[in-house]
Image (tube, rainbow, N blue to C red; front, side):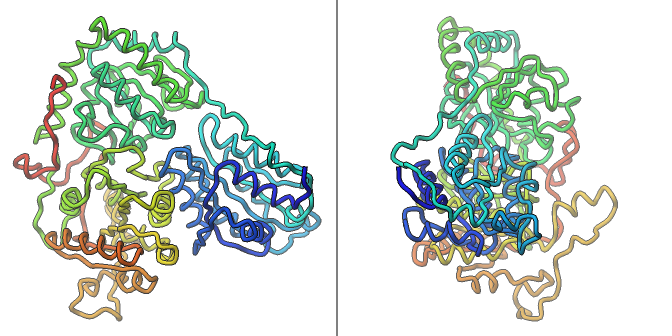
Length: 599
């Protein structure tokens, strides 16, 4: 045993739990922790410009690699309240992050001390656990429990509030004997899996809906193996995108009201059975259960028991970690396939692949108009970025169109804030991804409003040498809100454009587009390019790559769009409004390889 300050014990535990990098903003009430970070110099620290930005960096860091846990640190008062959006985002998407705040000394908590707020009560609804440590000797146990909770069951965030005097008090602690608590994951039984596969075999046109839980569980290879053994097509959710490569013959497209493919919705409507694994039947995926469920049976496998039956009652529910369930699914299915039981699904799988390749189920992208239509932007991005590109995005028409037109081939290569969708998330999350894996080509995707929300965080990328490409599609509108306002026959308070007195008349940004993003980005220490025509996109990306290698900073490519563009979406999966004409031939649409399941 050794005597040390309680906060040193906390830092030693973080090191032992695998933390090597943290994000945050120092302040008086949390300086004891920063003093230990400085003295030990084992965990590196990235200084954010806003504590909400630090929380989203922690999210991006966790989402980028299996096993990562992002950590966000801030002082008392507003630092904690600034973290709430990041905690909500992480809780909604089952992302483990640890947020830590300093707090006023215990003796002054009831005296309305400067920046003393009951952050625990505020954070509880958006965390797995939020606690204030009132006894110094409890710090080791609290941090041990925090890591155990974040990793066990449905992953999620934890918040710890540390009074100043608690951190500074000496305690006895032995880090050499410390061990992380065993992680708990519920596991399906063989009997449950056998029952599920028997039910699947009673169907004619089954699908697997692959959710983000499969990616969280690092079980994507098992998913693909199970699909290939059984010949069952896979529909990834937005959070599960990348769990099976886009060009795999059994990848049947995405389903939903917005981030979906026409062939994906058509395949879902043609199916008669759905096996959902690690998904939560989010409303942007399902629309109304009356339409989504009609004419088909459902099995739901989820790590959280209370998720089963939350949206609609499945015909059979299994509480299990996705990896544990898929290991059994593969084992049982391999045994059954020896008798050819799944051969009957080959015809259905080929039908789904044919639908995916049919021009009548694709959307037109080959527009030549100037200002550009966003559909053409994504066509150019598909041509310029390779299979190993990692995309980061959060919300808006830019994200919806990205999901409709881009391609993802690996797990954790679509980093997306699914349920919360806070504007401003994209830039700090992309920086967190870069911090987690500097070898990746990271491409962030924002509309102009998302980009403006937390644009100051680009300075973090410049200071800490975190290069990535940020594609900003600029129509100077709150595009998604404007499109939804069509239902109210209005276009109200959603225009971002104005005549910028500092822009030269010859520049596109001077034509009523308002903020000069190029000047702002350059002022933050990064590089920027403005693009007006589609033929300029590829050279801009090539230049961005040169600058990233040379200067190691983020590079923004701003693409000027037409002001008003409607992206395909609707109220039900059988009622999607297509605003643009369909492609006239296969070369006029996003690439789709026609591969037979029998090949």
